[in-house]
Image 1 (cartoon, rainbow, N blue to C red):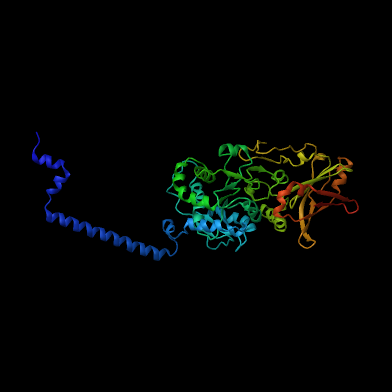
Image 2 (image 1 turned 90 degrees about the horizontal axis):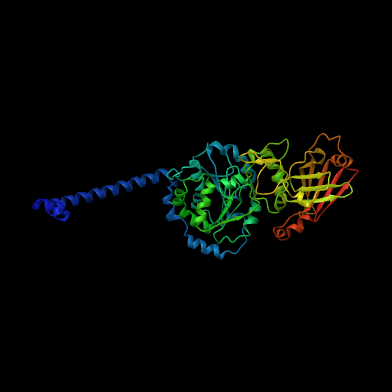
Length: 483
């Protein structure tokens, strides 16, 4: 049995009528005052924060100032000029624990007032340390889930977002890498120039070790080797990234997270063989002397392999390679070969790096197959890799005599180069045949080459293999000419 009072308590509207009118007015007045006080406190706090922090505003305050992507795309579509280095923004993912030791690599390729971008760190580095690349502190990444990998993987995945929000003008491509990635910017420009930056494009390379591709993904751009994202794709990725990162909290690396988010936008990887993750152990010699017919774009994990040049540190080795690169960027590491039939020599040149003389005749397919001087990244096995390899001959007399890059000059104005390579062996092998001994007697090899033009890649095979060798017996010098 219910009473009238019981029924009124069950009806919220009837219950409201039980409150006297004058008390209702007092409640509304009090609520209004509280609301005004909250707004006033928030406004004062915001003003104080803006005064204290200056220009360092949190991310959500950057969005209203950001250039309208629609207007930006309109300008992008109307600009038909070729891509150049000013159209690229670099975003390097690093940490204060590694940056001071690794900055020596970026100093080799970064050109102030020419290359643009930042290294993104988890906090400000030591103010006494001086670096060529400006740093920025990554925006808040700790609010995202991560059940695999580390917090830094989430933070570095968002480098593309932070770089986009940096609002650098006239950017067509956002290029991501690690703080120990060595880029070859002029070659990067040549490769990106093949693509339409007005479309959503994702360019990079995968790992050399199959075990790494199986663990992560075959169609993923590995972040250490670097990857490029066009402006339209970056604009979409910025809007989708935060929710996407939480969906893929179980992924291990930052590059795998970016790959997943790019894939959700319907964009697949455009592979370029010049991006090198260097997921190998041991000596990278065999890989680099058989570089694919493509511009050298990047090198990574250099602290995990032997120095490129003997008797040098890795930074010194890269500096030597950069010396040749500055003279003729597109030809760097490009391989060609010739034969000396009388002495049965096979000569293989990796321009700006090494010349090898084999005291036996090898087929072109043998010469362009990497020698197995390295192991897989994780298991330290002899493979498998994403390319074929050939073993090092167990017979020392059939192994190549190696000459490393030593010096260079320009000739005929600025159209041709002369590079000199020096024998790396101090003691000859006495039990080999006469042809081997004759090759060992050569102290230097001089290579003459015309400089490569970006258009030469349209006829690259013909351009690189038209080549001759000449042996001067009186001076023990081999002169080799590219045409």
